[in-house]
Image (tube, rainbow, N blue to C red; front, side):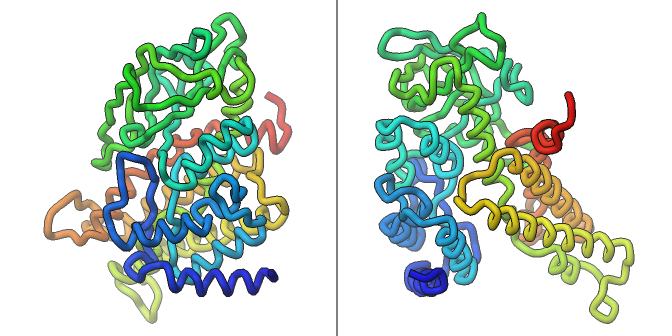
Length: 388
């Protein structure tokens, strides 16, 4: 089928199957899993239709619950969804991180056992990387996994584990050889969060939400068949997964209104322009930088013909996206004036409260997924080839 025909068919199907109540929002997106079932009839109908067509993970092979779309078809589908205003039906660490990693590095048995449950939304995943003493210096991790014959016995803790309170499974970095250099002796394990010895404690943030958690593991088991890659060689798997994560984080940031729309709502205009020249320059600069970023992503996507996640270029996009998003939130709060300092209460609209909390939440954007400093080091060494 020609790409234009595929796109037209996708638009027609989405028009029929995406309820009007969900269009133009991210409210339809589910992270899947057994602990947060879909409780809205429109969302459930949309999710079931997308799952049946393989469009929860459209670029995955059909045997794992995808639609087997080529890179060009997948891009055409995203264009069709944008035209209709149809949001993704499924998102999260299963689809953007561990799923792509298993497609590349998993055994046939691991793919067959885990990928269909991700595509169907049956299981939700979380990431066991950072520890109290191992953040940006991740290879200093201390969580231990001991070989007990048919399984590993895991003891230790993780922190800043996003969504752990809702997760069914975790992909976890563990130390399996304490005598090896710190970047060696690390193994990449998968195990269930619903077993004795797993304790999860949410961390309340300044934004009022609790997406991050502390996780404690006391004699927790991981089956031998859920070791991804080779024993003591998990660092390579871990780094590739981070590239998938950065690729997902560098996409379009969620937002309610554009910066120019906010400016028009809260500030005085003269002949259709902002009266304050300094603010006008900031708004224009932000819009130009955002457009340049989108065009650069488009060029990189077109150059990457096979559609696979890029390697070190993901650090460029992650760094730029996180800093653009922080600039956006700070600019919007500035444009809103006193309406941008609301925390709760009737004087403030839901949009105003959402923007303020999003501004606070995005302060973590230059740390989550690898700090900006780490990304600059990767770009310097791996992209530009600069010496240490």
